[in-house]
Every structure is written in structure tokens, then in C-alpha cells.
Image 1 (spheres, rainbow, N blue to C red):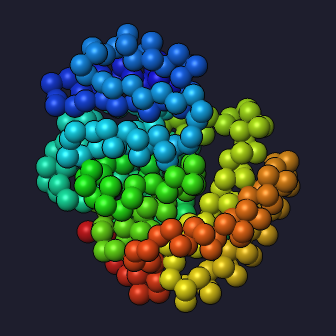
Image 2: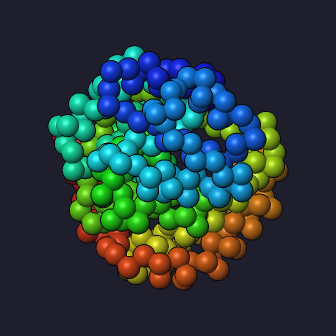
Length: 288
């Protein structure tokens, strides 16, 4: 995908003080050559890791290397229309202390950030939602570097599919509100697993596991007492879908590992947690 999207990034960055960092977890695919063909050496840093440690670790490594005050996390399957980076830079200048959820156009709809959901716990937030985002989606997210690092970045054990929601819950519980930027960037969402049953199984496993780990890490104990039975019922409903998809076995393995790993995951976050008061605020405060 980078062969299609990178040229749009370069054009959008023309004349702006932007430096690129590429965390490449599959360097064997030839991404480095694509990058070198489009950018001068002093415009980027390339961080390959053939072991594929996951999206969360890749992002954390890239943020740790940045020398700027803000970072835009961007999936390689996201296009930047002309003027998009200038709009994002202007939004940062208007509110430099808060995260920004950048809009994505995908699956025939438009989405901005992450929303809470009673069945799947977290989903892409529709742009038309009346309340603001819980936090930014990792596919197109702006963070003040200091804020991102103060919260420990993404929880690396999650690997992918849920690490941005984990951070979103922690930020919201700590009083950090995310600004939405309804600049809709075209996104080929889901292409990375499309047509590959092995990757689809891995995704089903991670989502099942990570929902439970995110709840265990970020919810207060009273909230957990209510949320866990709800999540258990939700997982039964999701199991029916996985049966139809031929993905029941990895799904159940994810549920089992999520339950086993929940106590350890909870101990690894000592900060503020998402409780009933936070939930009420989130559900009732409408976006400006």
C-alpha cells in the first residue's frame, strides 16, 4: 500500500516542517526502497524490525525517536489529500496540549476516533455521533509527544487491535479530552487481513483477548463488576459470528488468554481508571 499512499504524504508535507519516521515490521516487503525513492535521506528515519513485534511496539519506538513536540500516527494504508497536513498542523497550533482524532473514510462510512460500545467494548466512532471521541484511533492520531510518553504510550502486550482503545480509556479517565478533526482521510481499512485466513484468525484471537485485557486494565472495580458479565454475554453473541466465519477456535483461545492475563494486565496500569462517573460524563456530554 505504501507505493500508493507515500507519494500523497510527500506532496502533503511540501513546505512544512515535517520529518517522517517509518516503523516497518515487515521489511522483507521492500518498503525501504519505496521510501528511499520518494524522500531524501535527511527527511526520514527508517526503523525496521523483521520480528514483527506489533503495531503498539512499532509506534512506541517511533515516538521515542522523534525530536518534535507532536507526532501524527498514520497507517500505511491511509492517503493524505493535498493540504491535509497543513490542516492538521493548524489544528495542533490551535490546541497544542490535547490529542486529536483525525477522520477516516472507510467501509463506505466516515469515522473520527474511538467510541464505547456495549458489545465489542470499543468501535470506530461514526463522524455523526453526538458525543465526542473517547480518544484517537491509532490509524490517524495526533499526540503531544510528552503526553503520549507520560501515559506510557500504547500497552505493548496488546500487539494490535485494541492498543489505541486502551490508551483512550486511560486518557479519558484522567481528564484528557480528545479533539476531533473531521478531515476525512481515505483509508483502505481491513486490507491487511483480507483474503488471508491465518491473519483473520490472528485478528479474531487478538480482539477477543484484548477486549478483556483493556477492560481489566482501565475499568474501576465497580465498573468491572458490571462490565464483565455484559462482556461475557457479548462474547457469546460474537462467538456465533465467529462460527459462521470459521474463526471460533482462535476466538475462544483469545477469550481464555484474556481471562488468564487480566490480573497481570491490571497490575501494570497504576493510574486513573474509567468508572461510572466517567462513563456518565462520556455518555451525556455532547460534542461542541
